[in-house]
Amino acid sequence: MHLLPTPGLRASGGESARQIARLTRTATSVATPHHATPLANHFISVHGQTLLMVLGALAVSGQGRSVILAAAKAIARAARLDDQTTG
Image (tube, rainbow, N blue to C red; front, side, top):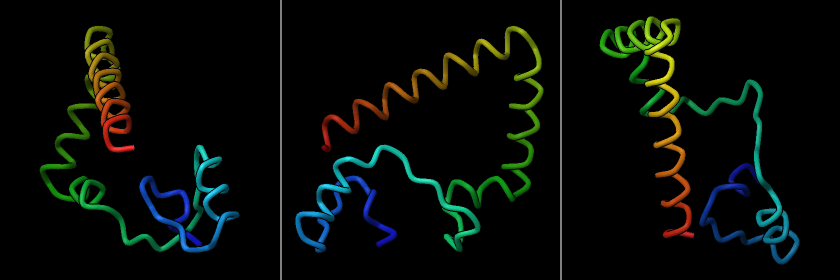
């Protein structure tokens, strides 16, 4: 059941499936054919590659690293807030 850890999914496998879904905190898949995501597909484009190069340059500079860290923390807070309001 590969969708079991999906947030908000209504598992049809009975109580054991719901319990597994509740207890699952992370999921790792290796060599699974997910066919990527729109975000991942963006990074194979010219614009995405350029963005990755800029982020890479920022990551190795002191000030850029702190900007990236602050942005990552803000994104994590927004994701947690979204989880709380939709979950």
